[in-house]
Image (cartoon, rainbow, N blue to C red; front, side, top):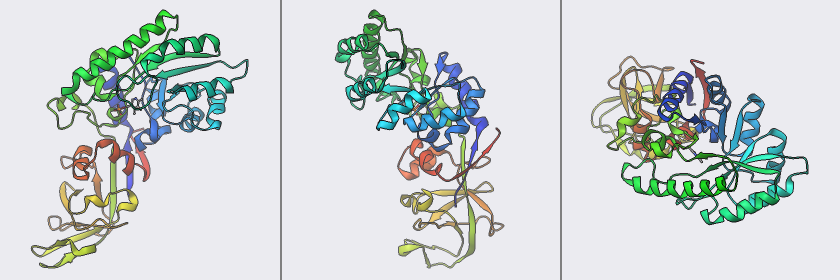
Length: 369
Ligand SMILES: *Cc1c(COP(=O)(O)O)cnc(C)c1O
């Protein structure tokens, strides 16, 4: 029963912060349904602000976005996975970011004589996740010579440590490797955009910016440097997601009485409790049992006992006026008690990315469009 509100003004604001911080072209990363903020609304809003290139995850996401943004350049960061994906790249004009020989050779086989496709190439410069090894450069250049229908127009890699202020040397090493790859392609006459920076690098690793910056989390208001010595680098970002749930019942909890499954919380004094319509079925994690807080009218309400499938109890002793039908915030909310995504992520023992991705899967509405 969680209700998600997305503040599109916050997303516009964050985009302009990142544009002015980077000074290069910004490709908003809207994979995973824009970190569950809703890909069509987020990308549409940013297109209106001047963004022309978008990074989606799967090709299917690209197909969806193509229908609402016929003019945009769309890169699929994962590239084609199933056979339909290879066809859809051509039909819908989506540029795949290719990370393996398997993808590259299948793609070449799927092209007909008249097809032309521009692609991105992803290199593994030290994260050991996806990407060609830098040593593959020579063979790749050869491949493009015999397959002129395919044209690499973007070369990218991903940083393993960009959000850790102490890992600058690792990030610099990755940048050097990427630069040498780009140099090899340049010398072979393949002009391309160079792209390395995610949100953290945009805000703290100027040299990595290249030609195309790829922010994700910062667009949605997550601070990559939360709980570090350089947290102030993300202070201008505004959280776009707010999530609320209804009060289903308010009643007394007498001193000594336990509450919810396992009676893991026992009232230390006479209390008033509210039963809130939210639980792990809404992606409000069970691990938040006895750990998290909700917000009502500026008051923080501690969660009491276990989070259930669709119900969670909170202490409302401090807010006598709360009653059936009121909404409490589990994330965000107005005023100084606003539950910051990093605060909730801390109680949840995870990161802002996962909180957005999970809670944002509930029913959404948009404000400030
Ligand atoms: C998700 C992703 C990004 C964005 O990363 P943030 O840390 O959210 O800014 C950038 N590039 C690639 C390839 C990604 O997969």
